[in-house]
Length: 500
Image 1: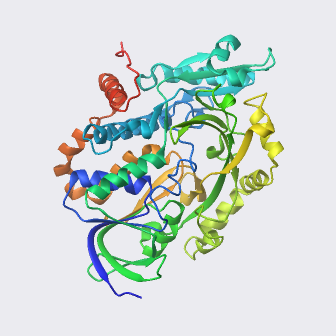
Image 2: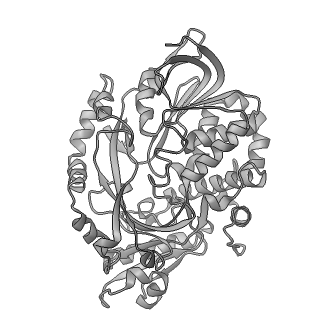
Image 3: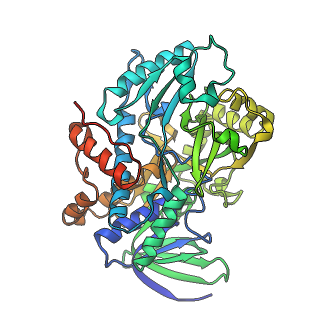
């Protein structure tokens, strides 16, 4: 055991997209701050950010139906879709800044243009999709969206999905060409290469075992070298916990009151991947359907073209599942050890409220390959079992907390930042839209944790992110400008006409 102690300005726990983004932002804002990163695996972007562990959708609410809710009066609430789209525009601007500044090189390694589509079946769903299209297509953020319930037109858009379908089936889709496929694993690795070149100390195979307040108000971390077992103490003025599902345990160890009465519910995912190149070549889009009744939002079925290792792939899923692990590389005791006296009632209340969800997840685990093929055939009627393999995706931990709207033990579907009142520590919890909104979420961390610096940092933030502090919807010209400049810089080649 080593008694070595080090002091640093900032410690980032976890080498995923969130720590990478926060590190990159801080290095631009305050280049002289000393930053150390601890990651228990051997490389960056190996857990939730890895390209095989998430859907790679540049989540801009272009195709995900759960971000647009039908209200009791039949109208469509698009406020969540607007918020997520604006957050994605912020990510695109920051990535463009990094490319323009030659801080990361070839953008094609991590982002590709790809149509985003929503697909529904049945009269009621077709009517919902049409109303959704009408609500979104009038909005400058969603300019260029098309709707069709014409089988001929749909055959042009999605030949593989329309093959051998019943002629009288009620079916409709929307399509927007400004969608993207994002390889968050490749982006994370590119960001960490950039951070390394800026003298950030990145320690792989180092696990943070404990975290506590030191007498001077800084944070003391007990860090173990996974290979040698040596333990070191590291001190920092500011700590960010970005360890995916592993963040909850560390937040609890910190003892901050903001982390009390919170729990986590793990959901695992499985994708099917097509191994027949002839089939892969027949589909070019991300096509999102509607979630089955009782399914969590992260289980919305979708058929996705993906670009991984410079190769086109085709994935279908995700099938949800249940494992008590909080990380793919976690422990079977993660869930049980996350239950503490302060969150016991919250967790019990959540268990009672979500019996049907638990049953659904266990049912999903038990599905045979043939049952999964039946679900795939709702998308590709001609799908053959021998063309598809199963691949296990990442673990997601949904936040459980007491809310005014939902009462005790409410399951939250989304991404949440929990920070101490004095801004000295922050943790990121939750799931989708996660990685796509990383830049917005990390700006939220910066605003909450460094309020004393914001005024001085603002000019630089505006230079990196032209829409910083500006509500995009009130500035259609700025939307047009951002769409075109980010498309040019990131090689997405999709010039949009100005909004009339």
